[in-house]
Length: 305
Image 1 (cartoon, rainbow, N blue to C red):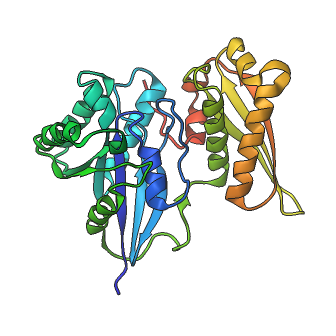
Image 2 (tube, rainbow, N blue to C red; image 1 turned 180 degrees about the vertical axis):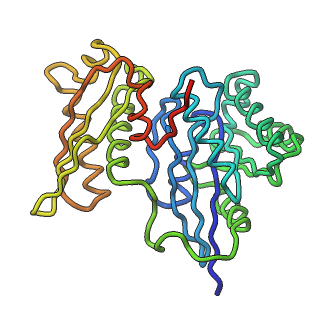
């Protein structure tokens, strides 16, 4: 049987559920997830096997109207991922679209559709979170999206519950081409260990401090030391922009940062399959989002002004 391989880009407005969908299709966690808007900052590749077909799923940052340099870098990364892909899936939060037809997500989705038209790019659209909606609410949304003229197929799915994912996966597989696999069959992601470690810690920060912590927070893996006993020592810096934010991350008596470190360490040990010694340091750097080296650490191109 001939091997097939290709790339599928998952695009959409912020918080549509792209990382949850990629993790579900891969069958393991390759992208961090939190309720915070724009958790994903770079293109993360997950690898899904379907028989003799290897599908490389690109989890992209949310596409929205950028205001800052970091915003532009993320949106550029998302469109680049879509441009290079064999298949593109526009993921839409159906609950948000139905409840707020003139809201941010609706406007961002309309802008993405216009971007696909401009690029003369066909795609599939997936209405997500259908497990929380009635069918009569979904049909008008599907009809409106279908009328855009850029979608080959409309899918109704729940990335969290798994509904409709087989049909969506079958469509993606049909777009893959004959050719050798790019990764070993048992590899689930393509992300450097240092960067993955930073992302896991950033996820725990967002989950722990979702309502308290501002958007501009970064985690950098500063040191990675392999030890003779097979364990690894990881030093990470958490960058914030103000002293008040540093106090929030540290917590009273350092309790918050200690808990974040514990949660991150447990997950990293599970991912790497060995003991992890994780040390977190919080630093204030007001202009970190304008420093070229931080973009390289995050896997993003640095956009010039």
